[in-house]
Length: 264
Image 1: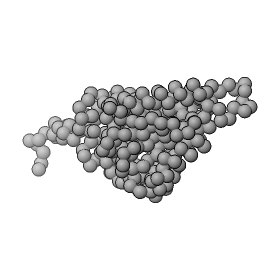
Image 2: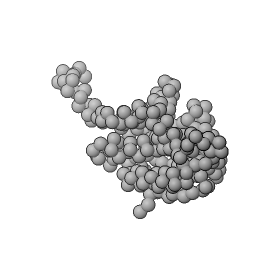
Image 3: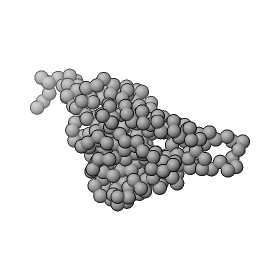
Image 4: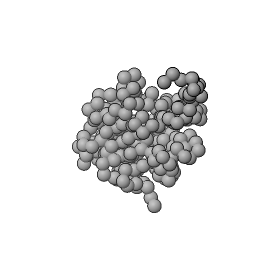
């Protein structure tokens, strides 16, 4: 069963569409397929001349090897509703060894990446969108929200690192962690999205942006540039710092203060 659809809406534009009803949960099979599709896209881009820049021949090079990737959804109302937390957290090192490799690959992809957010993006879905270079969002149903606090989950190390880079304003960081559902206007004002367009035009506009901006990555250094910029995200993932769930937090508290000594 395929979880993603790969298409080529323009000669220099590839498109990966999440197609896992009802809400594009980022399950291990979907993430594995995302890695496979990204390899296919990069292979085709490189065969078409991407990344073959020769500094001795700058003249006439602009435009050769251009490439961009659109990430969007084929599911109504949702870009992605994030992870299947109940099952994902049962997998040992799920984030460091399954989720993070897929998002790190997208975050440092050598093509220009554009998230065409044509529905809600919650938790891991918001992270997926934030891994792209540009974000175009629908003017309709399209909240971005990190809602982990509402279902008692800590944020993985990589999530914290990426959010710190993408949302440097302290109050916006706080409100994001407290599950604020950011509206399109707020996202635009924060700089978390680049454009707000009507739903039928989201993918079309993303393709236009990809065609315009994809020229800039033809020389092949864009992925390496991003690896340097986003290295804190990789380092956070590699730290393997354990995530404390609410029951663990409670146990640590009572172990420290002593249940029999606590003045209740």
